[in-house]
Length: 138
Length: 138
Image (cartoon, rainbow over all chains, first blue to last red; front, side, top):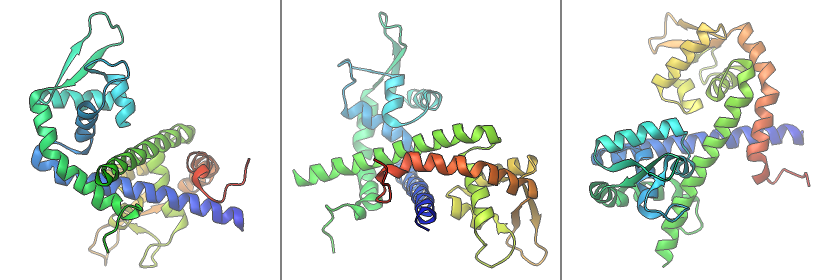
């Protein structure tokens, strides 16, 4: 009986992860639509704006960025190509670095990120905040 | 300071959800490849095999199934079309029911589900089990 319950609990937990992932992504896409970006686009801008690459450089390698935002490298490459077309990021090869393409924010990308940030954080707070011990709203 | 920390905690929590979702989906896809299905395919077979529709019928409406497996209706329709082509499910219109297409497992679908089940549960246990209070393995 205990083993059965445990298996059911695992299945329920996985469904909860799927539900939270889908609902939050859906709400983020909706909220960020006004800024011309989606949930994953914002995640990429978020990393580029907030965090320094592991090697301390000024731009991210696509592989490192993929690890940070939890996308496959092929999915991230398509996303970055789209952001570049919108003028929000630039891509460039580093001459000495054979490990490939690097990505950085443009000024327009940084401005768009700053505009969208409060909306994105508001959605996270609404979707994830109620589980947290920090919430004190009655 | 407290507000800053809370925002950072939300962002970290969202990244954790993304990471858990992506890693588990990736492991499930890999484990289920031998059975010719992916993570979402299994979720659909799982609902069809294990749970009765809300109206007590013998087949699921696509909309109800979409709610259960947390996919958009369009994504689910493509998935179901693929499963039907593989002979694992059948689709049919219910004459009296104007609310659309219904989906049910075939015998082959039930057999494939039974074969894949232990592998899928083993991945869930490996990826999600260590957080659970039920785990007693040292």
